[in-house]
Amino acid sequence: MLHRIHQLVESDKEKENQKHQMQFNLLQAQINPHFMYNTLFSIKCVVDMNKNKTASEMLSALIQLLRRTLSNPDKLMSISNQMEALQQYADLQKFRYGDQFEVVIQYSKEIENCLLPSLLIQPLVENAIIHGVGKFENYGVIVVSAFEKDSNIIIEVEDNGHGMSKEQIASIFESNQNPNKKHIGIKNINERIKLLFGEQYGISIESKLNEGTKITIRVPRLYEESEAKILK
Amino acid sequence: MKVLIVDDEAPIRQWLEYCVSHIPNFSYVSANSGKNGIEQYQIHHPDIIISDIEMPGMNGLDMLKTLQEYDPNLNSIVLTSHEDFTYARTALNIGTADYILKTEITEDSLRDLLENARIIIEEIKIKTKQAKTSIENYIQMLIHNPSIEFPSKQDLQNIGINLNNNPYIVITIQQNEIDQSILENQNELQNLIKVPLGTNKTLYIANLNLDYKSLIDKLKRI
Image (cartoon, rainbow over all chains, first blue to last red):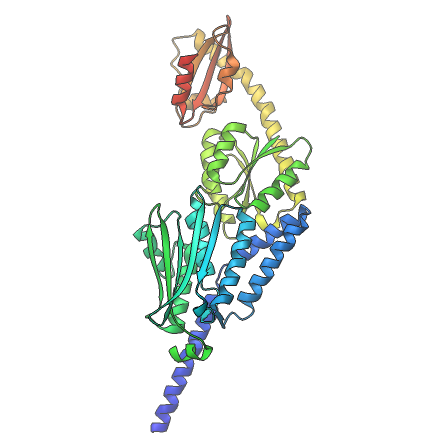
């Protein structure tokens, strides 16, 4: 009898893990295809105008970005690796939008080998470019900082852009019928973090209209993939 | 034909400029946002607008809706994505608009769209010229028959005087009072109609844009 109960519990656990993995894959697959279409179309435009050097630089940045982010989407990535991918993403966006903004990336050497889920920070920077600094005519600055606090890794994405009201922030976290489809990345990331590490981790947002927005990610400090499995 | 290109992505904007510059008798001006698009429109009065939809701040559809207030017959080519193609078609229902998927546009398809727009614009110009004669006759009749009630905006539209919902102004000017070209080149006036009244007088009917107070100041100075 005990053996049978044990078998049933194990089977339930396995099903739950599979469900989590499926949800995780689904959420990951939702992440922004518009960026891909628009970047490839921009490169096609540059090729048509025979600006081969610029096209080549854009393609190099895109290849590096894809290699770092999509080759192992279900794996965890080191902070240094993820920040390098982020720099390539920012470089590509600067090709597309010109020198209207800059992305400043800062993290200490002590945490560079800590692991994070892939594509964790990039959608937040994309939101900051499009919804934050893009709405202002003055120069936009987006600061991405990563540091350790109480055995957790904290990542902050702060911009000097348009800002959001409390209602706008609340709507970002509402499920299914989210009218803020352009902010879907934030809800996705929050759900991914909670699926992987538990309810105590996730995203918080502070914002003031016309002053800017700070998005904070809190995840556990991890050095091995196996640690993530234990946390689940 | 003057084309206003509005796109926030530098490579796409530059490519559109490159394509337009290859079409004989077409020239272009550019803007990198909806707001900047309106400013460029007011300065250059283009015949056709090519605009992206997704832009920070004022998006392309809001910009085109604003510009349609100035010109109900606005000619536009809207660059859409798969996601906003249907929405864009229902959002703009005034004027003449073509919609093309941004990722499928080519130099050839853009040239065809612009050539088609040119044909439509030239047909409208011919019709406008014909209508102008009957408008002039109508205004003359109004002036010489003071007992007739002054026409409503709808009455004016029925004979081809297309005023928008903004306030409008009627001015008569004696030929030697001011240089009339000054009045004709004011950005504050849209849909300007000029009717010669004989005896060296000209009557102008036009919509005023929201910045019309500066025009009143200018006229006072004149």
